[in-house]
Length: 197
Image (cartoon, rainbow, N blue to C red; front, side, top):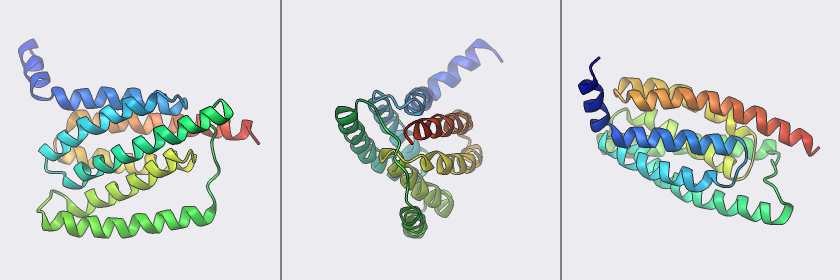
């Protein structure tokens, strides 16, 4: 592969690559429960809003709008927790809350899928299901529940296949890395939860 080919690729995909970098940095900070994760994640949300809209992954583009709202909420919620206790503390997730959230994710999958299909989106139901459960994971993350990492691992593995299919190779590579980061986050958050028992 020549330097010119690499330069052309970077020129054509610079925004997606910028999204990849900011997402990795943001999730890396999140695994460590560092408040700075939220403005970095906000930048990634905005970048991927544009990337997904251009690729006609409309559920994913819509998802970024919800991510922006959850990111702002998470930033505020974590900041408030740090102000009160001096650190970001992991909070247990009740079984009833888990079941309700999973049911809401299923309903959201159907509603988003129908909307995406009517807009002639690529992969409407798969994309909608991933978007819906990503919202559940984001909510759990903002609320500081360790279960968010389990759900992110499952969702991100499926996203890899979707992005390969849509020829979004940098994003597929990103999501492979996010599986690893989610595994690291799960380990770190479980340790933090057990330290406060």
